[in-house]
Length: 176
Image (cartoon, rainbow, N blue to C red):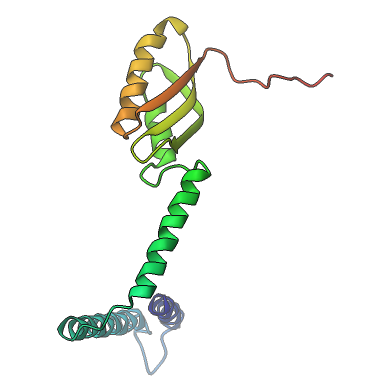
């Protein structure tokens, strides 16, 4: 991140310098300052890559002892995080909810998908619930089959879809 910030700072400085007007000593101006900054940036990145490669090689040829306690603590923390995520009915890490919602909404004759929820029932079973807005309820069996197939493509083996044929509205309306 430091190298990225330095590269951006160098590019900003070079852009400012290159915008200077030509003078009697520099009749073409300073437009090449940007090229010079790019060269410096490229050489710096090569030096960083060489440093990383050297460090990797030295660790490969003379391995350091592994701190078993540290590795165990990191593993336990990862397991606890995953367990807590599952207990809180979090979306499984393997599911991109936004992408899944767009895919379900792209099923033919589906107008809209909302109130989409995905969670893990167990290590191997994923559940899904969603409201699906359609134009004609008589088309629901075919739409449902296509939705179930799309869910199965994502490893979801317990989907529940609720069809709706009217725009969503609150159950309780405010008096006027």
